[in-house]
Amino acid sequence: MQSICLTAGNDPRKSRFKKGKGRRRSYSEKSAWSNHLVWFLGAMCFVAFLSEGAILDWGALFLRDNKGMDKAFAGAGYACLSIAMAVMRLAGDRIISQVNSKSVVLYGSIIAFFGYMCLLFAPWISVTLLGFVMIGAGVANIVPVFFSAAGSLRNVNSSDAISVTGTLGYAGQLAGPAVLGVLENHFTLPISLFRTGVLLLLTGVIYRMAKVNNR
Image 1 (cartoon, rainbow, N blue to C red):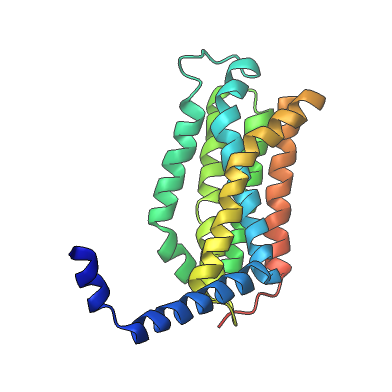
Image 2: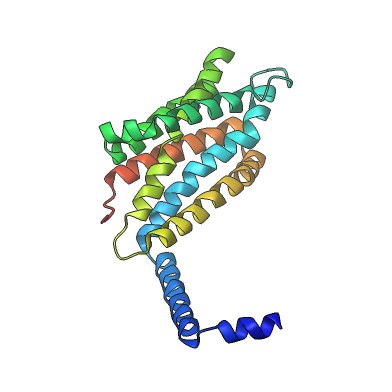
């Protein structure tokens, strides 16, 4: 009886309208996946998330094996990074309103790069932990800027563009530890982390020079 009532209550015109809307949504998603600017922003997000994922999975191991920190406290590095990211994201709107978004990405990547240098080359553990703080502070507002830019692209549905950019970005967080694992087998963990810092710096420079058409 319930199925009969539900069927009787259906308006065929509404059903056709929903089908058409579904087709338009599919077309919109397809256009987002085929848009080169969406892929560009997704690649930028991929690197930003990769650098965060690298610290998440390899930071404690680096502190234990390369800096001699006791394994009970080796998680302090990621804790410093997470706290710095949280604080900077709370202040993100105010920072972006005072400085343009491209400068936020550029200066953020520079700060994060010097954070990697402190992490790798500082002889004191306190400066090494400061490096984690700098990485977190630098990366914190980079990803939100990329998401905002994706949502403002012309000729692309904003929700679809953000969805695609986020998918590519989070793929970087998942792939980051694996990529560093492969590099660590061929080189060393410090060299792998150094290359991650350089890649993040290049991301900031490239985005600063790029022309992204927004609404």
